[in-house]
Each structure stands twice: as structure tokens, then as C-alpha cells.
Length: 105
Image 1 (cartoon, rainbow, N blue to C red):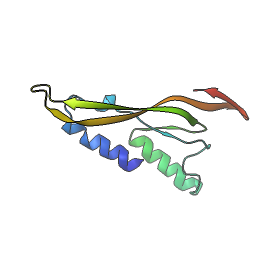
Image 2: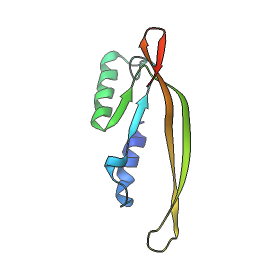
Image 3: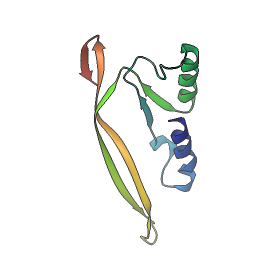
Image 4: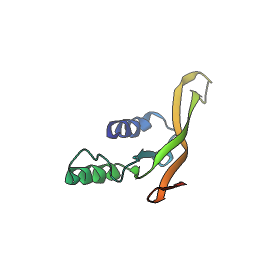
């Protein structure tokens, strides 16, 4: 996730019609913490660094439905094709309100 986030933010300079304000990266984890396989101290450090890199985190959340959209971009001056962009949108997620109880986010 950090590499993808950094890459997308770095290439924004090549897309003058896009701004960093339009970019949103969200890390979703169904457990109570990110990177549970690491020691707590290292996991906390990773969470802090990701937050500094403007990655939003959702813990105790499961993605139950998502959509992938594709958009062809063209040059605004001549209409020539410029490339394709893809977006994955979470359309529904569950976050436990209480133990053993889920509610839509």
C-alpha cells in the first residue's frame, strides 16, 4: 500500500487536471489493528507513517461489495487518446458496532 500511494501521488504532476485533493487512499483491515503480524510498536509506527503519507485507515471493517470503473482520457486540445484510468470504489462495507454485530459504514 505505501508504494502504490507514493507512486500515485508522484505521478499527479503529469496530470494537470487532477489535484492531490481529488486523491483518496484508504487502507481497510478487518482486524483491530493494521499489520497484526508485527509487534505492536512496529505496527503503531507503520500506522503513523501511513497517516503522514495521507493514507486513511479503517480497522474492524470488511469490504463486502466494490465496483471497478474504467475511464478513457483524451487530450482536451485535440481529442487524442491519452490513456486509461481505473478506480476501485467500495460501495458497501461493514463495521462492527458491538461484538458480533455489524452495521453498514
